[in-house]
Length: 434
Image (cartoon, rainbow, N blue to C red):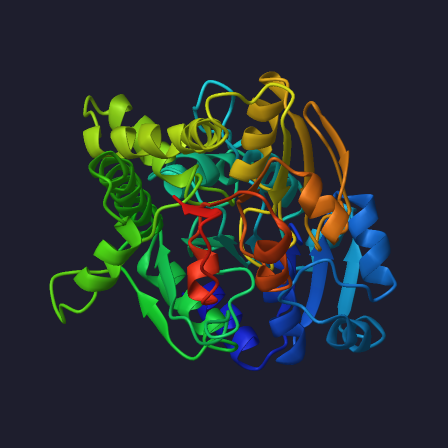
């Protein structure tokens, strides 16, 4: 109880040193907000390029303004580096490292394990450790805690442990880190309370759940809800195409019902860090427990098929022939106005088009060049000549920076996977929507 009171008091008085491991789209905004709240923050990052940019005050995250970052870096409360020895001075450690899937679609929590081992070697007693990296249920208690205990540390005396799922939506100007309710669940009541006190320093509303396992599953439910509904509407779009019915009109009409319906929209596939991956963590864990998540697996399969489906639709638009055709992909990031290529369906579409021996090019104001997988391309600047040269243009990512009227005026054929031309009131016989 003495350790708990000491740490709680230190957090409330903002005397606690906070370390954030992983300064990506989750970790950096968290670190920044704690610095702004008056805490002394250590940021740990393995990417040397990121460290160099941070030390110069240059932001590489859309949700963190360079001007704000520069002021904080020039102050005395934000310290960035790669050495784990700094953890010896941390009263709170927040882990925001990647949790990718292996090629076999099973969870890869090696980054979590590496981070926790570094914490265990350098643990300052007492400390609060919070895991934010999305993972399967049981990770916090069954994987993280044993690593700490093997070093002789005692829960409730040397360390407190909690899970708090990240809910950051990159590029969302309406919902930010501070105004989205923060969920916390600890491996003990005191751990939950300390996590609550911690995040209450920067976030308007903090919600406590009964355990770290509940908090872990909540995150997976949130993204499973999305992957299943996106899978449903993607399948529905393919069905409507067979029926020669406009799925976008169907969705608009369904939205007029004030209850019992929530609009989701079809697209060329799913991207980003969460939706393509997180539900598969749950699916993997379910199989371990002898349970088959049929809806998750089917939705994942449908969504994974969409890039190939988009290419087939382009083939139909071109009269059945892709080989030798000039095809330009508009937008290659996974999301509108976000400089992020993670799991972007555009990359698979480009690879499929290249495999079919099309002459592929792309244009994206956020990505000047693509050097990834088997792709080596430079973004084309849209002009009358470039547009007129294309046999078909496929709109994959609907960036607000594109001049859709200009594109429609000078393009021969357009396949719009986002229905963005219609939303800009650009209608033409040369535009085909998904």
